[in-house]
Image (cartoon, rainbow, N blue to C red; front, side, top):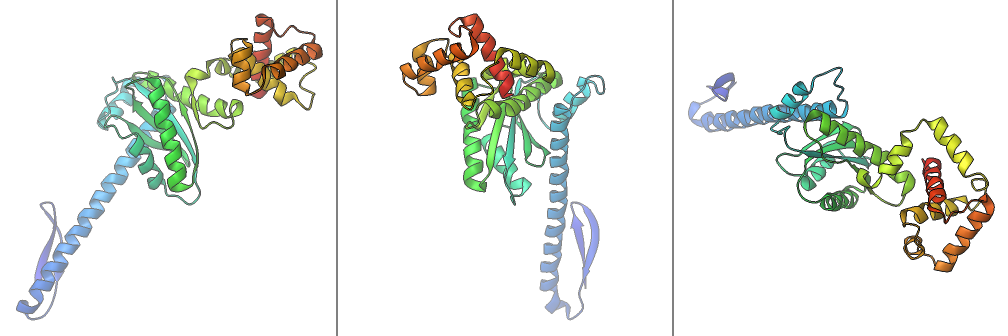
Length: 300
């Protein structure tokens, strides 16, 4: 006996069995249905793989967007084909995940659990580097909390060492690309300034971003000139940390000592020491700001 194999409304083959029809018919029907299920699942899997590839391509289009090469309407049309409205403001989140032996799909599933909105677009840029084009809603601090949740979950489930950079909201191909660039910069700059942190928002790193945009040679020359007498010392990392905290603490003794978790007298001792070594009045905001920028240049 011969039974047709159909996928949808199309016959794609047959199952043939020999023997007494009354005996083999029930076996033939089972084989026929199981074969159709396998073919349908293979088709669905291929469709999902094509969809995943389209999502990855869309994310890369945003990351590598260049208006001189491709027009914004083309990129936005690709987003719309995936069901993502390009008119919605989006904030780029770039998770960097180091997890040996963990499959790509397992990591993506975890990322999409945290960023599961129908308008969120999540894809892989490279091995261990992902991008989420998050449909912005709510306060920025909630996005930081969500990224902290993601980093923690990746560590718990997959034993991954993960960090995440956060951009600022943007619309369309141009705005979303700028958000991605900011997120990638935050992920590159943040760990150098705060090695113990795991989530970095570009909104908190605008001054380091400006310093990082300066040509490397000029940045190094500026740091060498302003920080003469300090960088050669063994305790330079502590002094640099003090100068950065002094500026970011608003040049206030109480706030700065709390930020450094040291006694107020310890802070006064360090500031006096810096003034003696450099001959500069570090308690003068203008001088302190110049030294702060030099410390950022040195750290970067």
